[in-house]
Image (cartoon, rainbow, N blue to C red; front, side):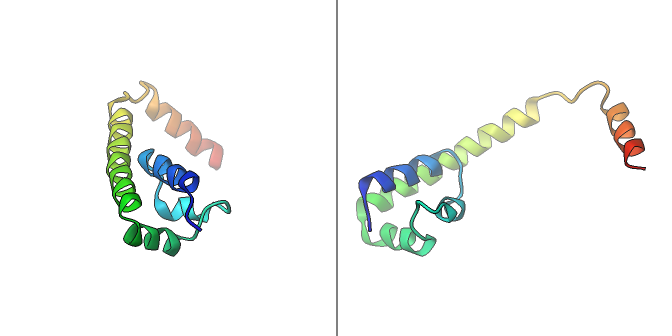
Length: 88
C-alpha cells in the first residue's frame, strides 16, 4: 500500500536517473504496475514522480556530458592492443 516513505524513496531514485522498472525490481518496492497506478490515482504523487523523472533525465545528461568531456588516455591504442594480445 502507498506510504509517503516509499513514495519519497521512489522519487529520490528517479531524480538520480534510476529507471522506474529497476526501482520496482527492488524487493522492498511495489510492482511497476502498482507505482503507475499510484501516479494515476494520486495527483500529488503523480506530479512528484513526473518532476523526479524530469530531474533524472537532467542527472543522466549531466553524467553523460561528464563522460564525454573526460579525455581519453594518450596510450589508449596501446591499451587496446595489449588487451587484444592477452585474449589470444
